[in-house]
Image (tube, rainbow, N blue to C red):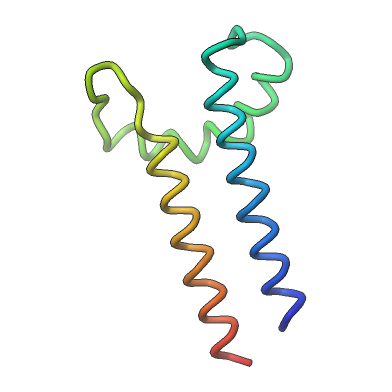
Length: 86
């Protein structure tokens, strides 16, 4: 069970890093840049449902922040469930 918990923790950390880098690079790179396109293919499917429900606030897209919070909460819940099974 420890391997599964480690896998969940690593997956959450990697996704968090990818979301952060995607959000940061969106200010500096063109949306057509190859790096931005690859990161977008990973992150955008997770952001789209949040963007549909969450309006922008003064032109600022808060969906990456909401996604990071949801990812951390889901990771914590999953790890707690896995620990309780053990």
